[in-house]
Image (cartoon, rainbow, N blue to C red):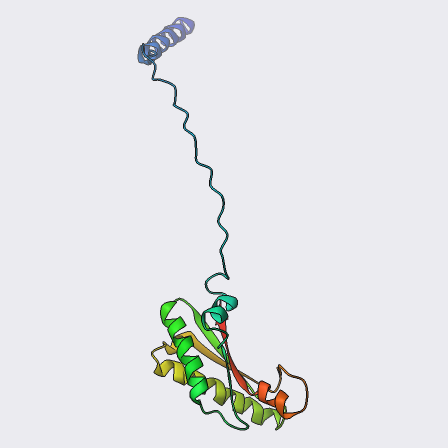
Length: 170
């Protein structure tokens, strides 16, 4: 009797499933139309990418470095013009932040030159903030005499090493 019941259940299930199956439509949709995809040539940027140090230096016409007199950290008129150009760049690109690196020449103690480099970097930062740049976008660091750009021990080399350099932070 179990075999007959099982056969009846199997037959009822098969009939139920057959009643649920879909029939193929009489009219099929047309095949997809082939369209030509336009070929595009990849564009390469014509200059340095936004947010890079090269982009910053190009935009400020290389005025990302300001120079100081011996034992001084005041902003003179040439420095002010360079910092105004930097402030305009930072206003145009509010997503970019910078670090101002303060440097000194080789004369003086390490401690004195680190303090002088810090005062130079802070003087540049304060000038930018005075021009409307958000202080949170400008960091400062002092390298003192540890990272000279000119290695000679003469006035020309010392003049190149007494500087504050603005560097883009990624």
